[in-house]
Length: 357
Image 1: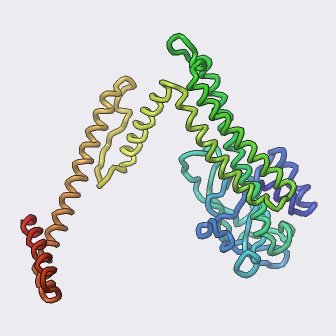
Image 2: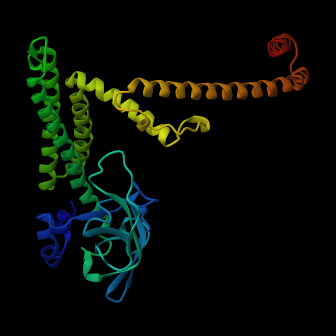
Image 3: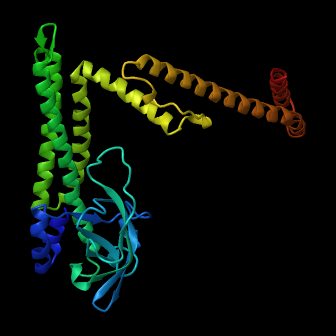
């Protein structure tokens, strides 16, 4: 994505300096657009680049930058002019530049092969020659980059879905039940066919969007967005369906994932209403799953009891407050309501008060 942006919008000197090493993956680059206060509203970014002689002085920070701290080059969107998209420019910042810093590595649920950090600029000076395009072109360059990024994300999903289908196909051929391989089951054949159909459909829409972007067609932006939307959703369905065809393996995996989740909650002391525990799964041996589950159930019961007590206490407090307000409510209604309506309301209040007592 960054290599394409430099190749498409950079000068000849910038292209020859950076593109060969990026294309050969000798070096890597990061796309720096998102900030703590600007995500989807990218035009509101506040990282500044102040011109001083032959340099730009950068100040600000970028959030959730893929590859932050590990990559060699940062394609930065920063503000060189007034508010709005026309005041945004694009600069190249090389790793090791004085004033360039990084936050701690983010802890993520997945995608851990790609480190994510904040990128911080504190009076970071970069040469004016590192400007991509002209001042004020940055927002347009960033949006063009995102179109290719959407195709990249969709393509990652295609690869994961394709690998899932291949693994599932191989497993169905070797796994046997009732003397026959699972691949002979018509239901599983249909299921695998549905997965393959979803993959092919997603692949076609991604390739169509890539062709539109390459040809600079008017519908390229919409097609790139559609490709990311459809391919990620469809490939997620494929990947989610794959474990279901692994028969008994799925049951073990689900059981282990539930136990792992519970043990993680216990270790991190995240149980509701301050329930603390020093329980660790390592205190049991590998063949003592029953003891493990018994202790988990016991802790769940303790947690449920504590929640119930808290709910009862809150309910009692609410009812007590309501009961105290009934006399005043009766007096107020007597002054404002007359006739059958007053009689009906007072009768209901009397019934409620009787139940409370």
